[in-house]
Image: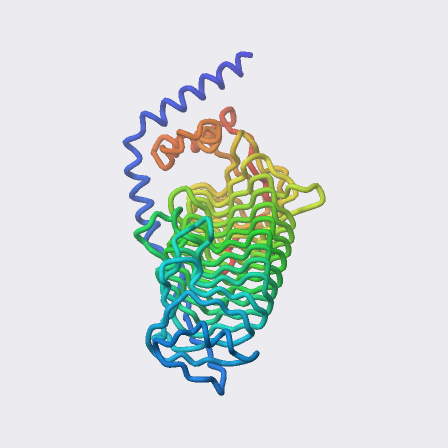
Length: 449
């Protein structure tokens, strides 16, 4: 009883020290500025290449009314748009190709879908689409593909549209190499999605660039691939919901709120992506009640949270694997909403994070399998020089325990008093908290990225 009373008293003293040391935040801010100067080499601009045009097209002069041409076209017809402006909206009901240079512009009249594709085997190549309707309840968009298969939209530039490219109840759709520019002056929540798949299967979203939009959304849509895209200054870089067996690979998510978020989805491969500079209280990757995720070779750099796991995996038969990922310059590398099980972290690199791993709600990550990870605060040794530490890595932090119990104290993270508390926990066994995680075979050197 005396020991318990003493420890409770210590908690009160520790909190008082943290608050009293608010003046020490300046040092933490200075360190954060120093951290912000580092920039990962992986952040590059995605190149947009215009697609090769199909031969033997029918030339269409600027200003031509496109709808009568489309209504009378034979299957397989190719229309070459000349530079200039064409009036929308148009409905594509026959399997044709419409192609042109970027200087050929199909412009919305401010209502509905600018191009509505309601046929199989249609192709749109290379030109610009300007505007759409403004009703989010009707998903007014630059291009909508509905109930169709084998539709290809490639090399299109979209400006001034509410939603960019939308596919609904379709199959084998390709949104490839497009550039979708949103309105930076509009609040991010009021923008439309740059790309949306809804009940759409066996499709690809590849080599697109989205700037100042909202999301790439894949909802109720399984067996799709999202790869080699760049999403910048949006909300969700890619958002899967109820979408199984998907692939998210080689994308760059820069300065968004969330890089990738997976909800109620299973058997998703997430590999070789970069999620960097996410804003506000965002994260590089979030997973809610999702399982059988393979997260490998990704870089989470300068994010508030690298990976956030909430109830994942959810089904008893599922597990998640996180392997060879980089967590660098994050406020928290990995955050568990509560104690987690059936997650494997292997061969990951944790460096220059304020906190490598945090568990909310007074939990721990002892039920997680940690093996062969690199932690830059590992204080062990490697006498046999096999690259593996001879003693286990254990994460113990008094300041993390306090902020887990009282999240409002997160404000003081980096202050002198929190550093002092962690030092006390290491020096005086009486104050030493229980470990958050144990890696029995930590790596001595980080993996090269």
